[in-house]
Length: 349
Ligand SMILES: NC(=O)c1ccc[n+]([C@@H]2O[C@H](COP(=O)([O-])OP(=O)(O)OC[C@H]3O[C@@H](n4cnc5c(N)ncnc54)[C@H](OP(=O)(O)O)[C@@H]3O)[C@@H](O)[C@H]2O)c1
Image (cartoon, rainbow, N blue to C red):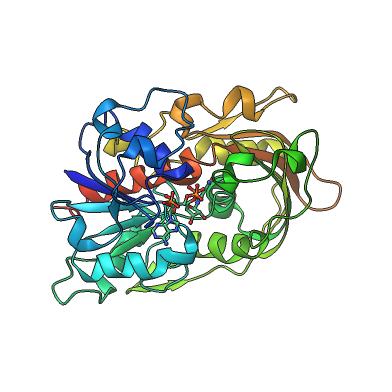
């Protein structure tokens, strides 16, 4: 299938290009960015920060404006657009009959738009049928969550199924690449921790509740979770870490029962054998030193969720840490997995 990338010059856009280099189903046919980049060769419009060579065929492509008429031949687009412009541009593509698989926040909380992590809520893709961007249903939008809600929902899903989630108190330690490029000033982050990320904390609760919702007759019913988040930026390059303490609705008998909930959890898309799926979705580390972003964020192609420090809490039921690669599992890789699921389920033709 021919795909376009909106926001192709940014940190997430570059990750799409890297991950799609050898993809068995998807081939890059168009690249779009702002007016500043449009008309230039991709190699001149971007500051390539990936640690693999920019493929020469991509380097020579001309960057387009993010307008549907300039993306003539594509079957669908991935979006890594800045949220200040993503709403209008993504809607224009959907209305032109071009499906959009987005990383931006603009449509995440729309009742008709799936907010998708394939291992958590694959059935939510049916919401696409309720969208009205085109009369024939050819144009639609699917989003993937914020790069904290992705690892958090994956970590909570086995517990949600086994015990129900009552309350979560968490602190994030978010990598620099989460701020895009050029991102945080080096003088702010080197040897430092910044205890606030603008706009981040308020997304975590609504997105996590939407991800853990039940879909019945085209309507989502959300679990009510008490959730308090503190988002911080730390000098890791890739891999957002979350430290969480959780109170369940039904108290487990022991920490072993909690571990068994993870071990017994069944990945609902395992049998689809999608090419971006990790073999082991949740890796529970027993060594208290792990997980660590530098050692584990890239494992299983950056698509694995790493959990560790799982222990009884003195205050609630349990505490743990969870970590995943923010620009792969939390952004471009997650969006590609969404596209693979949508293709095998017949939404992409
Ligand atoms: N980084 C992460 O870990 C992460 C994780 C999850 C979700 N996200 C979301 O993904 C999106 C991209 O993030 P990022 O980190 O890649 O940001 P970024 O590095 O700042 O890239 C932003 C992209 O948007 C393009 N753009 C900006 N203004 C535009 C306009 N007026 N018209 C068309 N294109 C325009 C830029 O093109 P130019 O180069 O031409 O300016 C660039 O390609 C954001 O919505 C972000 O919230 C990021």
